[in-house]
Length: 126
Image (spheres, rainbow, N blue to C red):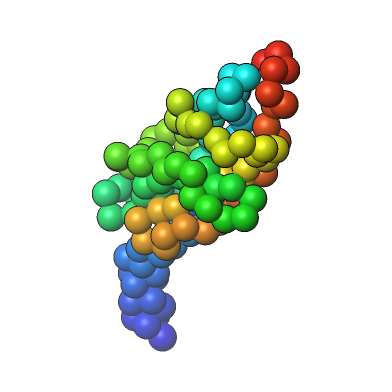
Protein backbone atom coordinates (compact mmCIF):
# COMPACT_ATOMS: atom_id res chain seq x y z
CA UNK A 1 0.00 0.00 0.00
CA UNK A 2 2.78 2.42 0.93
CA UNK A 3 4.66 1.75 -2.33
CA UNK A 4 1.48 2.42 -4.32
CA UNK A 5 0.98 5.72 -2.50
CA UNK A 6 4.57 6.78 -3.14
CA UNK A 7 4.20 5.85 -6.83
CA UNK A 8 0.99 7.91 -7.06
CA UNK A 9 2.67 10.93 -5.45
CA UNK A 10 5.59 10.72 -7.88
CA UNK A 11 3.23 10.56 -10.86
CA UNK A 12 1.13 13.44 -9.51
CA UNK A 13 4.24 15.58 -9.08
CA UNK A 14 5.28 14.85 -12.67
CA UNK A 15 1.86 15.77 -14.10
CA UNK A 16 2.36 18.89 -16.26
CA UNK A 17 -1.32 19.80 -15.92
CA UNK A 18 -1.13 20.44 -12.19
CA UNK A 19 -0.36 24.14 -12.67
CA UNK A 20 -3.86 24.69 -14.04
CA UNK A 21 -4.97 27.30 -16.51
CA UNK A 22 -3.77 30.89 -16.76
CA UNK A 23 -6.08 33.45 -15.14
CA UNK A 24 -6.40 37.14 -15.93
CA UNK A 25 -6.63 38.91 -12.57
CA UNK A 26 -7.12 42.47 -13.76
CA UNK A 27 -6.77 44.58 -16.86
CA UNK A 28 -7.09 48.21 -17.84
CA UNK A 29 -7.05 50.27 -21.03
CA UNK A 30 -5.91 53.79 -21.78
CA UNK A 31 -7.15 55.02 -25.16
CA UNK A 32 -6.60 58.01 -27.41
CA UNK A 33 -9.55 59.91 -28.91
CA UNK A 34 -8.92 57.84 -32.07
CA UNK A 35 -9.49 54.56 -30.13
CA UNK A 36 -5.82 53.55 -30.16
CA UNK A 37 -5.33 51.83 -26.83
CA UNK A 38 -2.67 50.57 -24.46
CA UNK A 39 -3.63 47.60 -22.29
CA UNK A 40 -2.10 46.57 -18.98
CA UNK A 41 -2.91 42.99 -17.95
CA UNK A 42 -2.10 41.03 -14.78
CA UNK A 43 -1.91 37.25 -15.21
CA UNK A 44 -1.61 34.50 -12.60
CA UNK A 45 -0.37 31.00 -13.43
CA UNK A 46 1.68 28.47 -11.51
CA UNK A 47 4.48 28.51 -14.08
CA UNK A 48 6.70 25.45 -13.70
CA UNK A 49 9.36 26.31 -16.28
CA UNK A 50 9.60 25.96 -20.04
CA UNK A 51 7.31 22.90 -20.19
CA UNK A 52 4.31 24.66 -18.61
CA UNK A 53 3.95 28.43 -18.41
CA UNK A 54 1.56 31.27 -19.27
CA UNK A 55 2.55 31.99 -22.85
CA UNK A 56 0.03 34.61 -24.06
CA UNK A 57 -2.95 36.84 -23.42
CA UNK A 58 -5.46 38.16 -25.90
CA UNK A 59 -7.75 41.13 -26.41
CA UNK A 60 -11.12 40.07 -27.85
CA UNK A 61 -14.09 42.03 -29.11
CA UNK A 62 -17.39 41.34 -27.38
CA UNK A 63 -18.38 39.03 -30.24
CA UNK A 64 -15.20 36.96 -29.80
CA UNK A 65 -12.98 38.35 -32.56
CA UNK A 66 -9.31 38.28 -31.57
CA UNK A 67 -8.08 41.88 -31.82
CA UNK A 68 -4.54 41.26 -30.55
CA UNK A 69 -2.34 38.64 -28.92
CA UNK A 70 0.46 39.50 -26.49
CA UNK A 71 3.03 36.69 -26.63
CA UNK A 72 4.83 35.94 -23.35
CA UNK A 73 8.23 34.66 -24.37
CA UNK A 74 9.40 33.01 -21.13
CA UNK A 75 8.15 31.50 -17.87
CA UNK A 76 7.53 33.72 -14.84
CA UNK A 77 8.22 31.12 -12.14
CA UNK A 78 9.46 33.65 -9.56
CA UNK A 79 7.18 36.54 -10.60
CA UNK A 80 3.53 35.78 -9.82
CA UNK A 81 1.26 37.38 -10.62
CA UNK A 82 2.92 39.41 -13.35
CA UNK A 83 1.75 42.38 -15.42
CA UNK A 84 2.58 43.08 -19.05
CA UNK A 85 1.31 45.68 -21.50
CA UNK A 86 0.45 45.93 -25.16
CA UNK A 87 0.25 49.28 -26.89
CA UNK A 88 -0.92 50.86 -30.13
CA UNK A 89 -3.94 48.61 -30.57
CA UNK A 90 -6.47 50.30 -32.84
CA UNK A 91 -9.94 49.13 -31.85
CA UNK A 92 -12.92 48.82 -34.17
CA UNK A 93 -15.12 51.91 -34.30
CA UNK A 94 -17.87 51.87 -31.68
CA UNK A 95 -16.08 49.48 -29.30
CA UNK A 96 -17.27 50.07 -25.74
CA UNK A 97 -15.58 47.12 -24.00
CA UNK A 98 -13.32 44.14 -24.67
CA UNK A 99 -12.56 40.80 -23.03
CA UNK A 100 -9.08 39.74 -21.96
CA UNK A 101 -8.16 36.05 -21.70
CA UNK A 102 -4.88 34.24 -21.09
CA UNK A 103 -3.41 30.93 -22.17
CA UNK A 104 -0.66 28.56 -21.20
CA UNK A 105 1.57 26.13 -23.04
CA UNK A 106 -0.29 23.01 -21.80
CA UNK A 107 -3.99 23.92 -21.57
CA UNK A 108 -4.18 26.58 -24.25
CA UNK A 109 -6.68 29.38 -23.68
CA UNK A 110 -8.93 29.26 -20.64
CA UNK A 111 -9.10 30.28 -17.03
CA UNK A 112 -10.59 33.49 -15.68
CA UNK A 113 -11.27 36.34 -18.11
CA UNK A 114 -11.73 40.05 -17.42
CA UNK A 115 -14.14 42.47 -19.09
CA UNK A 116 -12.57 45.88 -19.71
CA UNK A 117 -14.86 48.87 -20.29
CA UNK A 118 -13.24 51.33 -22.69
CA UNK A 119 -13.11 55.06 -22.14
CA UNK A 120 -15.43 57.04 -24.39
CA UNK A 121 -13.57 58.75 -27.26
CA UNK A 122 -12.40 62.17 -26.18
CA UNK A 123 -12.78 61.50 -22.44
CA UNK A 124 -9.75 62.20 -20.24
CA UNK A 125 -7.68 59.26 -19.01
CA UNK A 126 -8.60 57.92 -15.55
